[in-house]
Image (cartoon, rainbow over all chains, first blue to last red; front, side, top):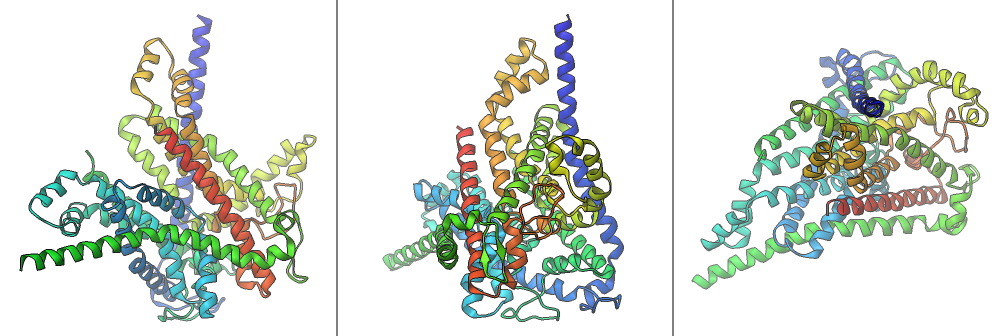
Length: 280
Length: 311
């Protein structure tokens, strides 16, 4: 009987440890988000969105150039990255369905999506910033697009694979050519998945800082010109948080709060939609 | 008339095929181009300091234009391995909890909560580390470690110095939190692959839950878990912003965990725009090349492991 008792105690011991690690993970999440909400929400006000950067020590001042810059940089990345990812994923799931090359590209795409984002930044610096001779918001968008393409490609591939093959065969039987089947049948039935894929790719890049450090750089003034350096929210947060002024820290918390809420909401909502749509 | 329509279909179909194929081939093209550009840009540094010479030299002197990557490589290795030592057991524990212990109704919300850790941007981790974790580390945890473990012979050496919170230990703690969700989700997926009848028969002969986990689930999903840990390593190696905030930017090799240091990504982040000579920037590109190659190797190893575990 002592053996049994020993086994039961060991059992309880290790199960408790496992439960504790689970709560440790939860603890970090609550702690980080809690601090972010407490510090960030208190610094949120209308001025944050409508005022330009102020010199340190003057108290007021907002992050308008950073918000607008972030929006421009991310949307440009979206315009470049999403179509390429979508079409690439279409090739892998449709035309290249059974080919070894398509499988290889799909694997390489996974790897490309996990390459350190700062390396992507140095690459774009060498290829674009060096050759044009100056930093530009566009080069930042290009760096983000490179990170985005593999994410969109993978989601597209997975979502198109979920569309039953019989659906395509039914369309073929009516005499539809393959491109029509793809655009009018397959895309249509996978539309929810593709849309959430796009949202997830945006969530993936919206918080990226490292690839922007030496591509879109920064700008202390409001700018809409994508061929010139532009302030982005993430780089501004970095600069302000590392700075010595209390006002700057407050703005950094506020900016972080906004960007995190955006990313978490986008992630949660798209996960929820996908889970509901593809439950079975 | 009919054949003309067929021809236009044919043309459009061809166009679609080429367009999608071109988009797909962009991926390998970019990877090859990236490698080529990084190699090309690092040639001056390679010529001047040597392939291996650069990696074992500890001098990082922008004034005299002498560069060696040993300190950054050392910092990267220490921070990521410490992070993995903290993260791997926690993540496996979390995966065990989610698959074996957690009540069914809570399972998916708990998984989501852990995965949310992965979607918090790294700059938020960095800032939180600087403003919240670093003060806690310097005033509570690090003095405590010095008082206890610091008194031991040999082990005490790694706890020497003034605890300021901006150091290797804080950086690896933050990095470990960021790595947990990656390992946990891979481990969870491989645990789920354990055949149900194996688990049921183990329970049938009277095994306790822990014995089922230890003798059935873990051995069965070993390869998948290793893959997850390597994936976490590959992710951690390239992490920039979370570490840049709390590591100082010190190009010296320090033994103490309470010392400032630098990793390859933080060196790039801090010095790339300041590099004023060709050899300086080329050395930075060489660091980027080292990072690119090592993360690529780690990630493909992880991929290989995960494909084997699914068979």
